[in-house]
Length: 139
Image (cartoon, rainbow, N blue to C red; front, side, top):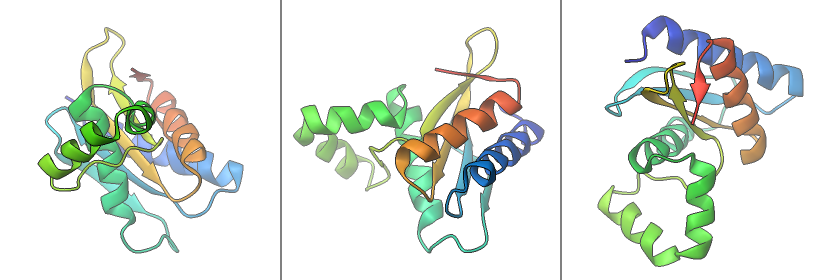
């Protein structure tokens, strides 16, 4: 299970990467493997609704076992399937880059990170940096 200290490190690393890239204010959510929020931070100036977007990116990745970038690709290839998932999960699925699975060095799933605030590709880049900062892996 992902710890609070690991989640805080991921958030700090994600935010630091966002600042180094000059990104818009970010919101970062860390979920455990059961989909529960471990930690969340919304930077000053981040717009309303960002916590739900970040959570949707992380939760979608966690539920489907793939990064939310892949969910975006699936949405383009099979829009009816992703629309059905969104209905089944009461809209809590955001199929855009920025949701990344978190694993330990043995490949055990610990949870997921969701980032929103800038372009989705940049959100994902920041998330990956945060996960690396915590000494964890992605998958």
